Figure 1 (cartoon, one colour):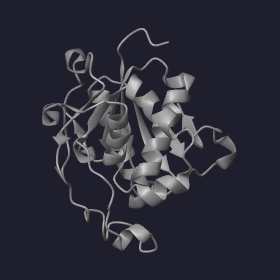
Figure 2 (cartoon, one colour; figure 1 turned 90 degrees about the horizontal axis):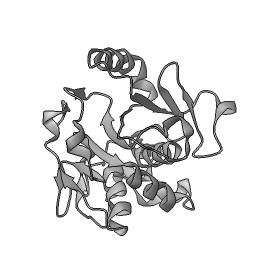
Figure 3 (tube, helix red, strand yellow; figure 1 turned 90 degrees about the vertical axis):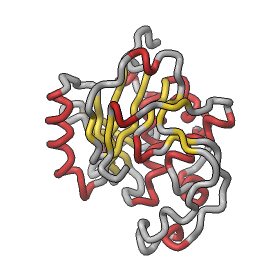
Length: 223
């Protein structure tokens, strides 16, 4: 059981960027005197170490979480869901009660203050209304059906993933419980936006996003 508020920063990358982003992230987190972070990458090179939960394994010496999943743009929903499931089920991460999702190119300016996360389950740059249903087109693998398929699913209020967002352990466990009986294929066929996927799950359980001025804490070159 978690008995204190401690935050884990989760950087998502892919194999093509790992060698470039890892040294930068390590240096940045050292400058902040923070060791509470992991780097998530897909296409695990060592399947013998994979956990039977979410097909992941964690290297604590490098702070890298390896996931057996599609490591391309269209695989991000699968990668994120598997990461959250692994964290929710892993004793390694039991000491954390809050989690911040970040892209591999983001600059963490300062650690998230305790008062920003207390009693919050889902915080970030809240987006509302209908999003761009074609945002992903031509960003996916050429062989992926999503590369020229428009997203036709529902939108709910969501925290933009490119800005970074935060989740409580309650939210993380909610996502884990929801997806414990859903296959990778179902995620692949129905979800292309990881941030919206997370929001839809939480929305079903009446967990709604709260606004956070993200640029005070983490900045994305693209946002």
